[in-house]
Image (cartoon, rainbow, N blue to C red; front, side, top):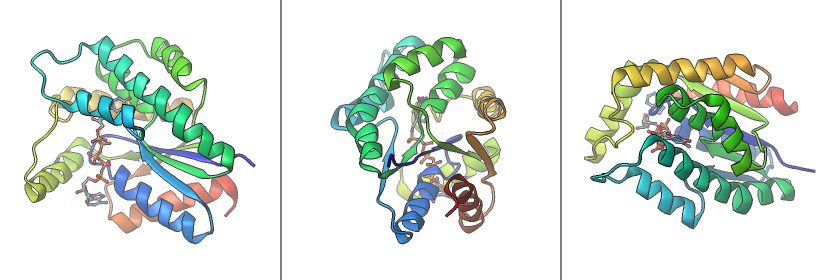
Length: 212
Ligand code: T5A
């Protein structure tokens, strides 16, 4: 039987990576084989593209190149990692997927979302997650979490994290719009609470998907 595909979405610092790992641990304790991966990334080529997208270049990608780079990375991970895992019957948890393109490059950068959907379909051959968990946090919460992590790890914000407040407001509204348009695929979770509180809500959404 084909496995299940779950994506985590939302603004930076919402806790996607944290919750993806926690969910994988729970599913493994239920006897599932689980692959956790991320976007952009998850294959050698896609990780190189991730590096390029995060690099501080003198000539950063224009909005259309940025889309195509994200989609090139997505085509690789879908063909080489996600589809084979689902075909084996494994569960796949992906930290970001297509909805990030619609939110960041569509709502954030102003590229037509209908056009992005067509391009995304080409890259993914129409693959969409069975469940998308949107970890919704107000910009001030995500900013505070990222600032705490940067202080703890002596790192700085990357190019996309540094985009202004208006961009991040459009992004959050965009994610909420996407969820409203497909309520059967999305579970919207208030991610401003503690890690355990959020994990509990994530698990409830996943249990509904498969009656665990
Ligand atoms: N992008 C991506 C696009 O523009 N288009 C696309 O199509 C795609 C796929 C990816 C960037 O690329 C953009 C979006 C991004 O800007 P990334 O590094 O993968 O870059 O960025 P994020 O996915 O946003 O990863 P982050 O690590 O920044 O955010 P997460 O994964 O949401 O948060 P997480 O779990 O790492 O937690 C952040 C910090 O908060 C703490 C954690 O310990 C950590 O320090 N934390 C909490 N603190 C308090 N309470 C909680 N409940 C907490 N949960 C986590």
